[in-house]
Amino acid sequence: MRPIFLHAIRGVSGRARQLLLLLCAPAGLAAQSPRTPLTLAQLVDRLERSNPMLAAARSAADAAYARIGPASALPDPRAEFAVMNRMLPELSTMSPLAMDQLTVTQMLPIASRRAMTRAAEARARAVATGVATQRFAARRDAAEMLADWWQADAARTVMNETRALLREGAAAASAMYGAGQAQQSEVLRMQAELTRMTAEWTAMDAMRHSAAARLSAMLDAPLHADSVQPELPAAIDAPTRDTTSAQSPDLLAAHHGVEAAAAAEALARRERWPELEVGLSLGQRPNSTERMVSVMAGASIPVFAKQRQQQMIQEMVAMRRMAEAEARGAAAENRAGVIEATAALERARALQRLYDGTLLPQLTAVRESADAAYRAGTGSIEAVIDALMTLNTARIARLTARADEVRVLARLESLTGRAWLAVPLATENRP
Image (cartoon, rainbow, N blue to C red; front, top):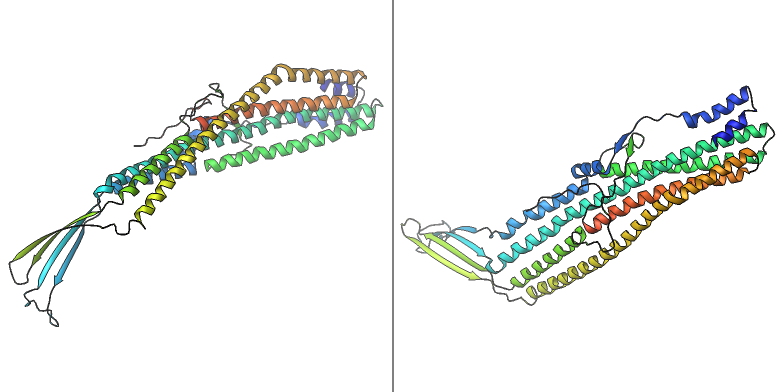
């Protein structure tokens, strides 16, 4: 459109030409300060160190592993010291039954001790899987937000270029209207399109700041949209609809949940067994060197097993069945998610090839043809605007398809537990 403008202002001289040139100058001469690049790899590295939810998941895993030791330890022994059979009111020790006694007892949950340890270990593994789940969720969210930011930022650049062309067109139409070569409606139409594009640019700028704010919340650190340049990661592989999900953190969490429920059921069944208790008692009569020893052994009697232990077993059986059903549901949902995501990935990549190879070159040729026809006086301003706005829409759609590719790959990483973007996966060292 610049040739149209230059051609139109040749017939305008003096202050009018200076005014028209100044009208277009801000669009072409606006300088932007350099911005710091921000990649997904940098985001993931910062998330590993500062994401609050990931830190909470690690603390939960540490707490779960700390419960294994207490589960495998015996109950603390109980010690009692008794002063017995003193005569009242003087508390005299003259009674032949008077005695000082020290008793130590120890509970021995022989039947349930190992089951308690296995249940604690299974629960710890289930909770520890939450760290991987949270890590993939944070990585997915970061990639999606980075894609949102990049898309809004790149779309804003395209809109800036389109606005510059519309400014030039509005100036050219004004110049031609002043020279009697155009109608006032053409000037008004150009100005209306420029205003509409400015409104869309403002909305896109707000989306850019919104994405930066969401990433700042994830990092627990400020990110400024005007000083950071988002960069999208490249794909390193081409997943298919048959991609395996064996390492999916969600499926691993469901599997460990079933293990924990089965261990809890085994523990509940062990609770029916009596608990043993042994004790040792040392006694001595006051004012005497005679000492006595007693050895005790006892066991709990499950008199109320029907109301207590049996109900616990039924509860744990139901919990295990629920965990198994949830695991099957998670596996089915994961398979459907992989198929859906790979279909969306194929669509995004096909659109990019279509736009790059066919549509964008064609729309560029249409715009250039409309410009040439309007400059020659054989075309209309409506054709120029329609061609320009159609090209603008297609360019933004191309950016959307590229951002969608990253979003889908990030989701596939969470679904499959594999890195489909050129950013290595972090690992968690757990016992």
